[in-house]
Image (cartoon, rainbow, N blue to C red; front, top):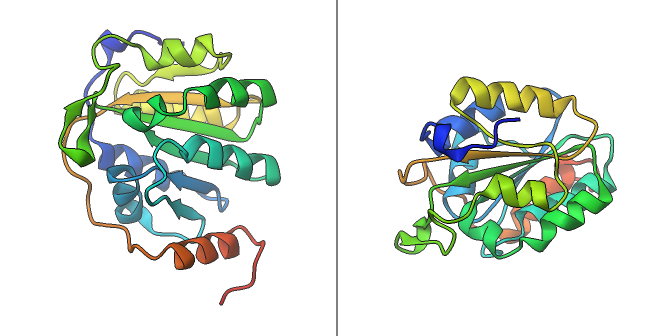
Length: 200
């Protein structure tokens, strides 16, 4: 798989997120990490199977892992920023050990903590997220070279028999829209969307 970040195009997070949402046809769960990642998820296609994180930096992959294990017949996507992933790198080896074949992780990497003032992350220009994921045991990990390659990688991941990670280099454009910040409503709608609770 492509593991060379130097050969990747810088893409737009909202465009990439919209491309993903357009592919969903079977009530797949999507966990959106904090900040711009879930703002773009909300704007790309609000659906009851989307979970919008609020203030839980670094927990998109762990939450998605829990959903994937609890509902093994449902495809689960997790959208996470590079800065947030740095706070929970241990989740990668946990996911590799548990091997949920229905989990697809997408890392949006712009090398900054965008939501708090665009400070560079400690890993900016020195660490390769795909190499870290591969070294953590996630063999099915790759950089998306461009939009067409992202589409291809998502299609392949949806039929893979192992967890997959796709890393995307993104620009520093702000998120589109804003998530309605009501934690109880977000939780209840998501649980209803997954069929584990009746609507309020």
